[in-house]
Length: 591
Image (cartoon, rainbow, N blue to C red; front, side):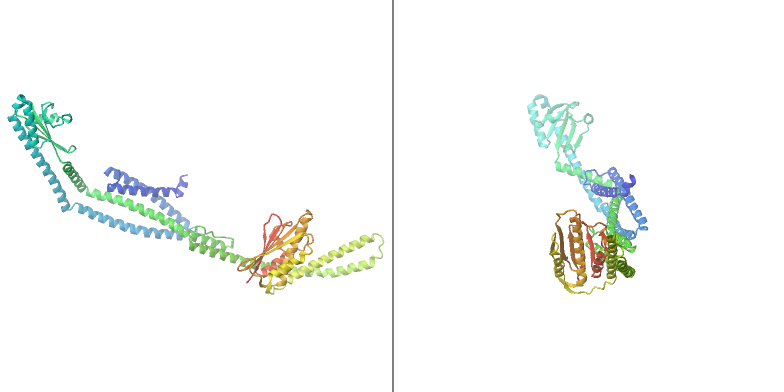
C-alpha cells in the first residue's frame, strides 16, 4: 500500500500544494501581515513545517529521478527524458539560486542600514522628546496640585464653616488650574468632597500604597496611558486625615504618540540586539521558499520532459516493432502536439506503404508459385486424358454390340466416365489459362459502359434477380485491360447468382438482389458488389487460394484469377462482413 502511494503522483501533488501554501503563509507571517503573531516560536514552528514538507518533496523527486535513471538503462528513449530533466532543472535552479543569494545580500545591507547611526539617532531623539514631554507634563501637574493644596490649606476653615462657599472656592481652583476632576479623600480612600462638575459615580480611589506614601509627605503622580489621564495625590497640611486627589486628562493623540514611540523604541532595540538572529531567520525563511520554488520547478521540469519525450519514446518503440517485422503497429496521436501528430501520421502512412509493398511482393511471389503449380498440373492432367478418351471410344465400339445384358447400365457407366474425363479436361484448361494469363494491356476504356454491358447479359435471363447499379464515381474513362476486368466482373456476378440460386432452393419466394456501387478517390476506383445469397461458407481470405471452393463443381480458381487480375491492376480484392449474403469490394488503381 505504501509503495503504491509512493509510486503515484498523488503524494507529490499534495506535497507541492502544501509547500506553496505554507511558503506563502510563512512569508506573510514574517512580514507581519498574517493573522498569526510574528514571534520567535511561531516562526520556528512554520520553519519546521516547511522544512518537513520540503524534505518529503525532495525525497519524492529524487526517488522519481532514480526510477527514471534505472529505467533509462532498459527502456529506449528514457535517457533522452533524463537529459531533458537535467537541463530543465539546471535552467530553473541556477537563476533561482543567483536571485536568492542576491536577495539575501540586499537584505543584509538593508539590516545594516536599519541600525546605522542616523536611524539610531532618530529613534533616540524620538524617545527623548517623549520622555521630556512626560516629565514636563508631570512637573506641571505637580506644581499645580501643590499650589492648589497651599491655597486650600490657607482657607480650609471654610470647609467646616460654610460648605457652599468652600464648594465655589474648590471649583474655581480646579477650573483655574485646568484640572478636570478634584476630590478630597481620607486616609482610607473614602470620598469626602469633590468639585461640582466631577462625576462622583466614576470615582475610583487610589491604591492604599499611594495614600501611605502621600501620608509621609510625598507628592504622588500616577500616569495611566490606557485612560489618557494623569492623577496626582498630596496630603493637606491643615488636616491630619484629608488628601487632595486630582485628575487631569491628556490629549489621546499625544498619549498614543508617546505610547507608539515607546513601543517602537523597544522593538527597535530588541531587533538591534538580535540583528544576527533576524538575519539568520530571514535567510532560513527565504531559503525554504526558494527551495520550494526550485523543487516545484524540478517537478515541472519532470512533467515537461515527460510530455516532450513520451512521443519520442512511443516513436522509438514503434520503430523497433517495425524493425522486427511488425508492420501492424500504429501510433495514436489524439493527445499530442501538432508537430508530433504530423510525425505520427507520416510514420503510420510509411508503415502502411511498406505493408502494402510487402503484401504485393508476397502476393506476386505467391502468384508465381501458383502459376508454376497450375502449369505443372495442367501438363500432368492433360497427358493421360487423350489415351483415356481413345480407350473409352474403343471399348464402346467393340463391346456395345456384344453386351445384351445390362446394356443400358454399361452405356451409362461409359457416359459417366466420359463426362468425368471431360470435366477433368476443363479443369486442366482452367489451370492452363491461369498459368498462361498474360500481363494486362492497359488502354483507355469506359468502366461504366463495361459494367452496364456485363449486367445486361444477365438481366434478360434472370427474372428472379434484380440488378441495381449506382455509379457515384466521377471518373468513367481510365486505363485498364478491358478483357481482364470484364472477366473479373462476370466471375463475381456469376458467383453472386450461384449463391442466390442456392438460397432460392430453400426459399422459393426469395427475390434475389445484386447491388453494384461504384466510387472513387484520387487513386482508386472501388466496385462494391453485394448480394442476398447464402454468403461465405468459409473464411473469405481462404477463397482466393487456388483449389479452394465451396461449390460442388467449382474449380477453385475463379477468385484466384480475380485477385491476380486486380493485383496486376494495382488494386485488391476485399471481403466485407455481412449478416445476410455476401459483400465484395474490388479496387483498381486509376494512375
